[in-house]
Length: 261
Image (cartoon, rainbow, N blue to C red):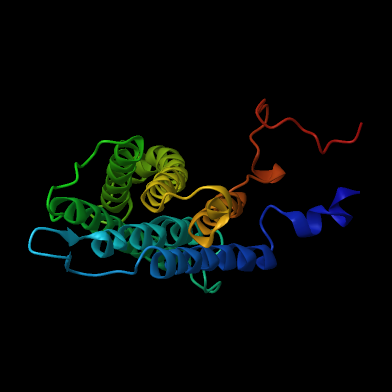
């Protein structure tokens, strides 16, 4: 019987060991981005680096962008999605988990907004010529995702915390809030992947990399980061796989593959 087989450790719900692996993946992703930024992209700065009277380097300002966005989406939004199913402290009651979820979302929104500001500032302060804003697919997808993140936070806060909608309204809203929250998380990871790829193209062009140079750390590390983004997405979303007991009767989207022939 399956009850005595793999389902005991595969879930859902996800076993604690899998949740630990998920958080390790989140942490490793953040560390890899930090190494990429600090070692290969020149580090971070709060002001432009003066080259001469007419020219500066704003790369240090821009480099806050990937750091803050990694903190915002794979780490904070990912952790917010785990707050109900697998919170860091398992003894939290439902109200405490709700507050934790909201707090993580607040910090994620702040980090994401600061990340966007860093990108815009690095473009606008660049000399001798400003860098255009919002010209790539990554840029537009990023703004779209940020708007979704903000709307999701406002909807969740007003609907479930303060002033708090009626019970019937909350029950009607909950499935949409859950779906849009997961969708925003995935959009954030996809936007990051697009941005990392865009940045590696800029690095490759600026350094005129070719041949073995394309396998340097500046290029291979971002590739590893994108793999970890995919792993984080899969690991976090696995915690939200509905179990057979949660299946509504007659649900054609979840065929009864566990039923004995």
